[in-house]
Amino acid sequence: MAKRVPHGASSLYLASGVSFLNAPESVFDAMIEGWRMQQIGGRRLKEDSVTAGVGVVRRFEAYAMKKPWEWSASDFDEWMTLLVSQRQVAASTIRSYQGAIRQFCDYVCSPHYGWVDECMQRFGSHPVQVCHEWNTLPHLQDYEGGPGRRPLTRTELQRLLDHADNEVSRVLDEHRKGALPAFRDATLLKVVYAWGLRASEAVGLDVTDFYRNAKAPQFGELGVLQVRHGKSSRGGPPKRRAVVSLFDWAVEALQEYIDHVRPLMVRSEATTALWVSERGTRLRTRELASRFATYRDALGLDEVLTPHALRHSYVTHLIESGVDPGFVQRQVGHLHQSTTAIYTGVSTDYMNTMMSQAIERTRHRPSDEEGTGS
Image (cartoon, rainbow, N blue to C red; front, side, top):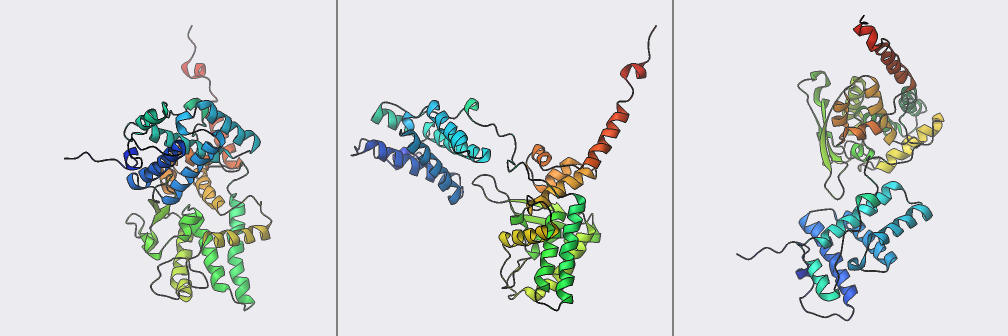
């Protein structure tokens, strides 16, 4: 039985012994195409993610003015220095660049794909790994956004949700159009917070994504939410998770929207989208962001607050209420508990309570408890 040639093997892109007018460029292009197919055909990664990685490799090659079999760690260090010190590229972007170069080098250095032998025969040199622990950023956390990002305080959250509800009443009292979208948006903000969702997860919901929870029959058909569009790992498919319902007021608001408001907005029975626009199409994340910003600015809240702050608030408020961090971690779909901790911005009152408890527990010195010997 013939041995199966792996996706990305050099033999699939370069005919052995064939000379090229511009051998370095031809071999490099073949490497890129082989890596692209190894990721798409072998690893089943997303096309856009693969294209982004290829772009990073080509940018490094253009900067170094060398081909992969000539690259060194010092070339990579110089490029990183340029990006950080002169172009001030964000840490998360730097890490993604480093990841792309590391993975490409792993690919071309692997004996499974034949590029090392191909380069040795043609150029008398071969690729090496240029990304090492000592010249790349350690991946310490998943969230590396602006340091000003924070959750809403409980008071700010209440003001925001009250304002959204009052907007519905105001439109109705003035006999103006827009009461249905206003009710939808007020409910959407409550759902984003009450189930700890990302904006993309929220707008991607269908009415069929909720199920009964035998352990919480009081929530009826809305006891468990199946999130189908969770944040994916790099290049992978969206992750799924189950989120159990916790807040009765949010369940009541959502049930009212499903029963009385959504039917008036849906133009086709074929759609299962939970949140629909005035045109009958699925709501988009930018529309959620726009409504959030309008309410935030009307209340004079901090401009740094975004819809994602509602997810931060969900994590923070549960932790403040004494909910087990491991449970919160599963609810929001974090792989590591350290990531959940990053999302937590506990209030001063909570910190003072924890401090008082710590002082009380450590008030007695060990010698006081053990007694003194004579």
